[in-house]
Image 1 (cartoon, rainbow, N blue to C red):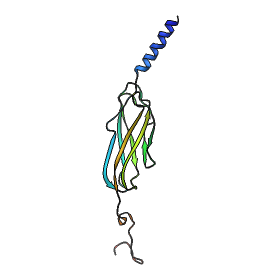
Image 2 (image 1 turned 90 degrees about the vertical axis):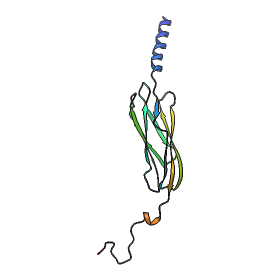
Image 3 (image 1 turned 180 degrees about the vertical axis):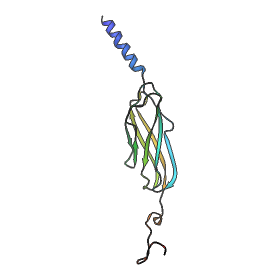
Length: 142
């Protein structure tokens, strides 16, 4: 009797271990190149559940407060693709190389790191300041 129960337990364990969740990204690093301060620092990383069981992303955390990820909270069924949106704060000037650490129930890589990099150039002050008019004059042409 014990052998039958033991065989049943191992059979059930085999069924569950045969189902695996896998996450596969189209690309893991996005290079923005060089762009102006206050430019568009958003990018969407596309991924697919290449496993045969639902994939659940439990967390996505940027390496600093300037890098903010948004990820799907619902399970991703096998074969389905989705995106993780990453937004970089482009008011910061200079080169950057930031990471987002993704935690999921993927069997072979439960923790995955994706990266964004680039260089933000300072915008001249007059390009970002409101239009200034001399005292006593109107900003509109007469």
